[in-house]
Amino acid sequence: MLEIAPLAKSGADLAVGTKPHIGAIIGRPVTLSPAAPHSRWSLRARDPALLGSALGRALPDRIGTVLDGIARLGPDEWYALLEAGTALPVLTGLPVSVVDVSARALGFTVSGEGARLALERGCPLDLARLAPGSATRTVFETVEIQVWPTAPDAFHIEVWRSFAPWLWHALAEAIV
Amino acid sequence: MILIHCPYCEQDRPEIEFTYGGQAHIARPHDPAALTDREWETYLYIRANPRGLHAERWRHIHGCARFFNAVRDTVTDRFTVTYKTGEARPDGGVA
Ligand SMILES: [Zn+2]
Image (cartoon, chains in turn red, yellow):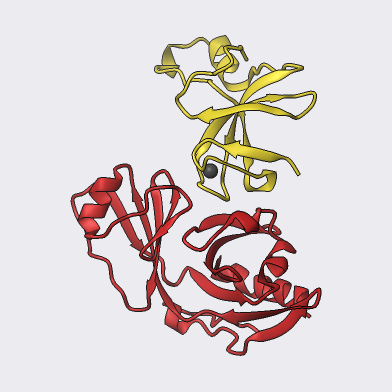
């Protein structure tokens, strides 16, 4: 069961289901579990070089790829999924946007031989083409998610917290 | 499900990641106050509505989140080409 504390101020306040849901889909084992807390940042800039140098980090070049925990979601948008507590520098006077969105989303891990099948229950994207090192926004049914493959049969799923209980139950329903 | 080629992601992606944004290549008048009521009405409301190829805006909202343009056949629902915002219609068609 997954519940969210009503007055959460940060990712650490979110009370998520602590017990993994273990089952199988079409006979293939799948484990659905809450991911560890992360530090999440929304990064926007027209000029990737300027953003990269201001942050002191290399940014992934191609849309849909990941470099050192940062995914390029769009032409001017990156998303950093970093170890909990990691802070990015506060930037002023530059045409870039660096916003801490740690409390905006929750992470789930879907792993096991049937992981892709479980996600395919609601996600129309061709997940077989999504290899580790890539990440993208997409949808599960009508809920927006991000899919970060971490291994050939393991996925990290980012979901906005108000949608998280629904997504958890929808995935758990697929894994019997 | 229809697959739509996003010119920014450079991938064919499922239709439900996208939203429709109306007819493409409609520039907002620089000085609306200088327009007659008829001209303003035309800008706001009058659209091509062709039977056949139609240039229209789409947004990859559940992907890269960008608006882009597409030429789609309104009879068959087939997308013939998609291209980035700001680029001219590649097939040279009108409306
Ligand atoms: Zn896209």
